Image (cartoon, rainbow, N blue to C red; front, side, top):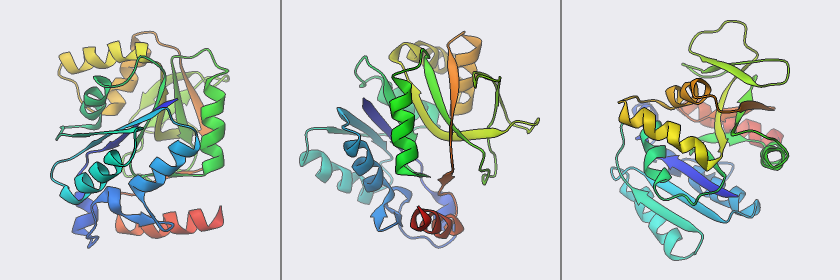
Length: 232
């Protein structure tokens, strides 16, 4: 399995709340967020890991460049993008033609949950397997509507009785990148619009529930993440 990490956001909300470190370098559970993901992906026997980072975060760029030089399984791309969907488009130009797991740098999850998620993908006839969670602690969650078999039927900005929200972790087959490129060509933005386009283009998209997934968007989220990891 190949892995890709979007670490291109500026983390402006964290900085406004007094967190000095750039988001990828925020420490949770004794590790920087970016280092935690690299370790977990390597534990999952990653074939290769691609990371996009914002040039406005030189400490992150330097950190990742050093890691890239010290290993043969990591490629780092330094570029500003207007959205996470555009960040994926940059990564897509470098990804090998095989399935890959994509996540944003600030996702905090149980490692055993994640391992089960990766393992499940191989046994499913799907084009995209989206990690979802019933834990909602986001200012603008993306609600995920499913049928009884967890096939995704809609991605909604407002709550209409859905059990799950998007966890910001995606397993994708390379064929679905044709939809991504169409979205970019049409001037669309935001990852959630790409996900909606997957449905409209007829790809087989399924949800995979994880017990709990957190994002680090605010200073208070760091303490929540610390407590979550300590409990697991």
